[in-house]
Image 1 (cartoon, rainbow, N blue to C red):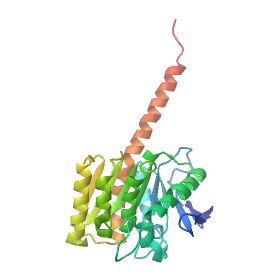
Image 2: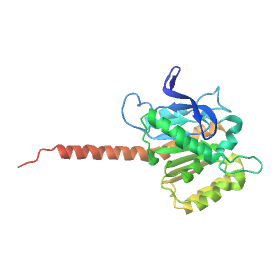
Image 3: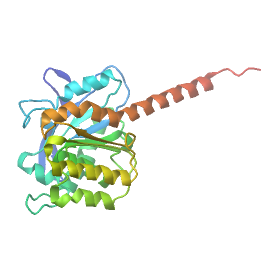
Image 4: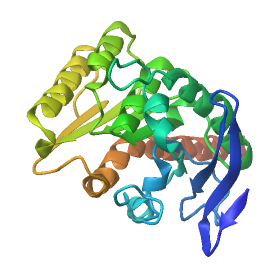
Length: 279
């Protein structure tokens, strides 16, 4: 592990080997502002297309400005560890798609998910002060990265307790994700989905159908499900970056509230036990 030059908030896990996918990549860890000052543990968000998060020299078509989002969230009392997992270029479609598409291929999504669950997550949990439980562990991505993030929530509910998907590629493999979710259970947790109205009528319709499907499964609008249609937005990193803060706030705020509630309860219990009994 090494710190990024000139950036104390970013760590890099170099050359992380994936036995599930037979490849190696660097993993970026973005620490919250209070990490070096406090000893508490933090929720973790595993983010796909890691090279598009902050670095314009590595990004495909602009960044999400994750650093700005981290500081904005911290100003609202919300902090988490963000893990940027870069895609592998030409292998991106294969890794991010849990289903085979006759035209585009794919189908290695389960192997990629196993890589995140069994290789990346244990490594992050060992090296950083995480809250490793499923309620405080989530997946987040856009486009195909959103597809695999939603799939992870339903495929591995014992590991992931929330998921965010910006402009998810629901169309892939004849909308196989909708079929999969329809037949799956209803894991507890929170789901964020959005779409831009300029991404095409069919794309918006797919996202709306997904939101309706999740509502039928029992996810409650504004509580455990947030669906956003952004007027005028396109399928672009810049537009995803503009929606990143409210998306992460919806997913993470309940975890912060619950942590504070438990901390107050613990303090109350300690004070009660420390009182000297009166005779």
